[in-house]
Image (tube, rainbow, N blue to C red; front, side, top):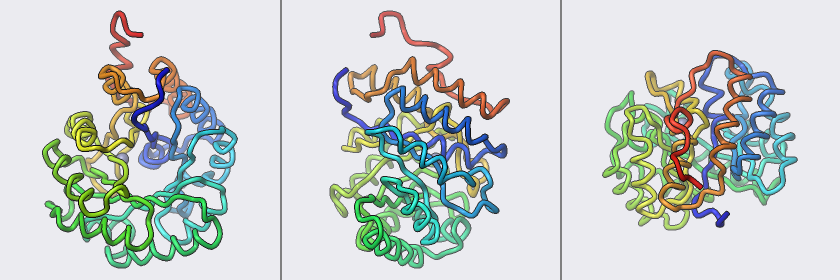
Length: 304
Ligand code: ZN
């Protein structure tokens, strides 16, 4: 297998599980994560450090991290909304944390009850804590609603670039762009990644695209064309954003891997084993709909 040319960052165990009502039993989560690793995924967002009262689905985050860390060579990530969550995540031993920072003021207030400026200060505090207690841990700011907001409507490019500059100025190692609400189109993806890269250079992070209106893969390809090499996606397309009504459907990992591999762009992921990883997911969440075209159609004749 040739060395991976793109990094597929699997977000299902976090973004996916926190968006569904049912809570997956811990043992099933661990089996699912093992299957994702076996398929060749090398970065997995395994949980969210938030109060269990708010998200009971994530109450076992520390235990899930502990297990995930037993897989060598896999970057284990967790989402943290604030300093308190960051402290728990940093103490759990994760390699990387991601902080959702809305580009839209309205979404920021609804999602984390903080203004954008207050969120920048939160990032600064988290960076300070990281420097003190876990200096090796990478910090990513995920700029949510970068391509539009269900509350505010249009989010200007300038607002996104401003937020990217602010979070990197506050010490974040990278800033990625998230289409939280499924409003992005390929021309916008190209334009915005271009502008953000012009502002923060190689601190430009992942593309987190949603398939809400069927443009998930097209948007990933547009991001690839302008130099993005890390893509967030979710097995079976599980998940969306609970604060953006109607917004569901992360990009399906199986279809994303198929697209890149079919183009000769190595992902390091084995599609058959990836499809097999749907079994433990389904076992832990019986009846939950899974998405994706490649698992239905199978691999084409002659595929190697
Ligand atoms: Zn998502």
